[in-house]
Length: 99
Image 1 (tube, rainbow, N blue to C red):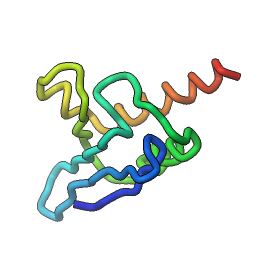
Image 2: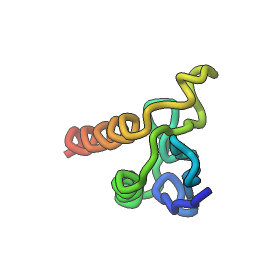
Image 3: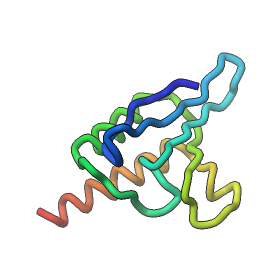
Image 4: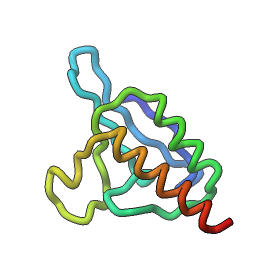
């Protein structure tokens, strides 16, 4: 497991990346930075967005989501990069609406 400092939701937040040379698929345990629901609370939006952008640089296939709406495998383990981009777009779109 590789710990990734991902502040924004909370200042001390981190995510875990499960890596191993023999793994064919890599999993990101996102903690509360990326949820199974539309959004999370944010203490510092600039740190939060920077954390999301930094996750783009990591190599993972799936995200294991906490706080999912339903307890089904397909709701908890999702396509990683697709979900990450959905979260980034959601926040960027909201910033445009606020301005």
